[in-house]
Amino acid sequence: MPDLKSPRVLLAIAWSVFQLYTAYAGLYDLLIQLPVHVAFATALGFLTEPTPDSPEAAEALRRRRPRRRLDGALAGLALLCAAHYVWHNGRLASRMATVEAPLLTDVAVGMLFTVLLLWASWRHIGPSLVVLALAFVVYAFVGPWLPGFLAHGGESFLTLVDQQTLTTQGIFGIPALVSATFIFLFVVFGSVMSHGGLLRCFTDGALAVAGGTRGGAGKVAVISSGLFGMVNGSAIANAVTTGAFTIPLMKRAGYRPEFAAGVEACASMGGQLIPPVMGAAAFIMAETLQVPYSTIAIAAAIPGVLYFIAVGVMVHFEAMRRNLPVLSRAELPRLGAVLRRDAHLLVGPAVLVWLLVEGRSPMFAGFWALVASFALSWVRRGTRIGLARALAILADSAQAAMPVALACATVGIVVGVVATTGLGLKLATGIVGLAGGSLLGTLLLTMVAALVLGTGLPTSATYIITSIMAAPALEQLGIPKLVAHMFVFYFGILADLTPPTAISTYATSSIAGAEVWRTQWLAMMLALSGFVIPFSFAYDPAILLISASWVHIAWRTLAATLGIVMLGAGLIGWFRAPTRSYERALLLVGAALLILPGFWSDVAGLVCFAVVWLAQRASQRAPAPAPAASVVSPRD
Image (tube, rainbow, N blue to C red; front, top):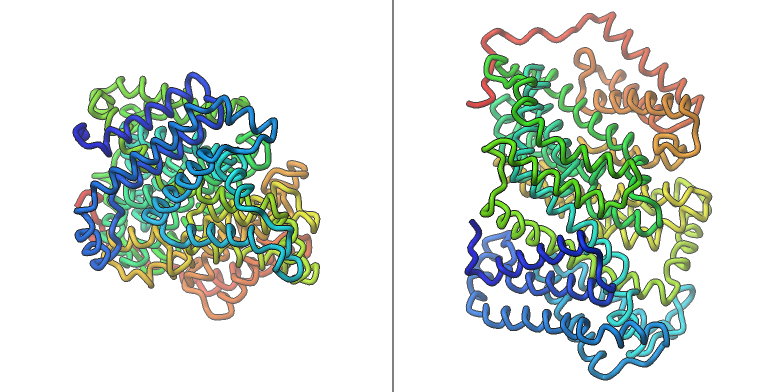
């Protein structure tokens, strides 16, 4: 039972109840719904202590604890700002249509709300996003004095405050709308799944399927983290929850601590790449492109599966190279027993997928999948969600959604400035010019921009900014809009694995007792296919199921699959047996040729594969079988 005497817990529960009520009954006017949503997030941000990431941060946190009264006052101010929008909604909504000048009190409340939002964002997201938002505010003012394509007519102070805080184009724009509708609901859904026992179902099911194979512990991590990520959509939450089980299991099976931590970080991050949930940025993409969310999910299916195949292949080759032991089948769960025990937990995700495929909105699908999951949790005593567990879900969901909501509202400042100044189109033209009109050059520049931004920003913020600044450059070169946005979406997520701010690797390396820097580089190697696949669908969108026959889609999928198998073999140094230098080179070259589309490149890639296959077969250097004693228990 959560502490119901805590103002933070009560506020979190109230926020979740508000969100669930509007998901069922319908949204209020956006100038009520979104200010209330952002105010809840801001107030909860002040009432929640930031998580210290170092001894120095912990000491600073200890010194500031006497300031809790100030935090409570700031939280109250945020809620009062929302009350202003609710009380004056009729006037604020009508003045948007009549272009009536705002009152002084409206401007004052808007400025105060913005300061509180940025303050809370600084505390829970860090300074990068806040500094970026403030830099764009400065850009809005100094436009007339800037050189070249960066110049614009400039904005007056009152116009900027009006646009950013009193309309649905700035802080209360599309990012905040997606946070207030789809994202929060799916955070609650993931929490219900977690509290209801779905994680145990996935881990036991993965143990039953792959635990008895060579290096099965690593494959269990990939499968269970992928499955849980499909309904969770949060890399860090996935890494902490599944990693607490899979990382010790991998270490006992003989994997190096850094490798085990890297595998879990990659698999957890990949949950944002594979349907049906995919994380916050995917919902923002659907709203930005004005397409059904199911369109995004269907397009992402094949690349997402390819990513997990690539990670699983490298885990397998590493196990073969190190001749790791096999988990004891006597102590592994049976798949039939797992399904008999937990089949009812799979109904919620099944309802979600069915409704999305039927074309229902993510909000509708998420709400009724949530209802189904809650109701069916009562089938078995061990999975029942009673009052105490339900209150814990409401509180935990709000805490998990808070930093996402803060990021979405803060990045709305950037989106609003870009829209009013026309910076997006200017930057797109500049990127194309810098790349000399080359598609590959533009793709590489876009990738670098997304990775650099992603080192300091949350995934959703990275996607939003790169989608309005870099994706248009790809569209100018003839890449379909969905493909361009999927490209920046991928690299916005992959930025979570690039040093030095690969957040999930800090969590997994802590669990594994591994060195963080080595974990981050190993995680990047394991996720290398994720860096290559976007280039593949940028040149040929067949694997996104766009503008291609089923024969072409099947061929591109098979070629890409063989390519990532060769990539994994080349990186690990094992195929059918240990690879020699020239075999490793052929594997890596052939992988690139097969992953990147083209008839002759496919032929050359197949030749590389055939040469290595025949060479290893001729050498007959098959790995020796594991000794009978090399068996470990998954429960040791």
